[in-house]
Amino acid sequence: MSFLPSPQSPQYRVTLFFGPEPAADHPSCTSCVFNVKKRSWKGGVQVAVEMEDEQLARARQVIGFDPWLQAALAAVPEAVQSDYERRAQDLFTQALCSLKLDVAIEAGLPQENRTIPASAFADEVNRAVPSQADRIKAQILAELDIPNKAE
Image (cartoon, rainbow, N blue to C red):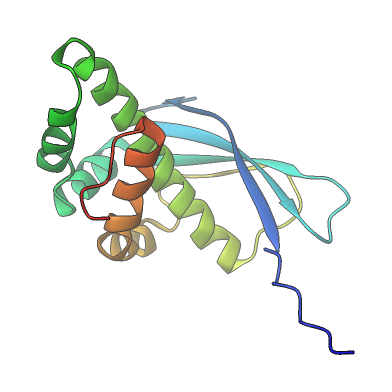
C-alpha cells in the first residue's frame, strides 16, 4: 500500500478581524487588525498592522490601481459604482496590511498581541507591491464579485 503525502498545511492561519480604520494616535495612518494563529500555538494573537496613508497612495499609483478600478467598475451598474469603489478602496488597504503582516510573519512573529507600526517593513512592502499587483487585483475582483477579464 502506498501513501500519498498530504498537502502541507499552512503554518499560520490569518483572518481579518476588523479594519481598515484610522490608527489610534496616528492621524496619517490606517490600521487593520488580524487574528493570527500558528499551528504550534495554543491560542491566537491579535496583530494590528498600521500603514501610512502616503504609502497606500504610492502603492495605488505604482500598480495603477485607480485607473484599473475605474475600468473594472464599468461592469457594475452606475447606481452602485460609488459603493463598489469605497469597498474596493477598503479591500486594497486590507490587502496591503495583509502583505505587511506576511512580511512580519516571515521575519518572525512572537506569540503576543502587538502592533506593527507604519514605519516597520515599509521598504519590504514597497518592494513587494509590484510583484503582488495581479494577486491583489484578483482578490478585490473576487470579493466584489466582478468577473476577472484576465481569466
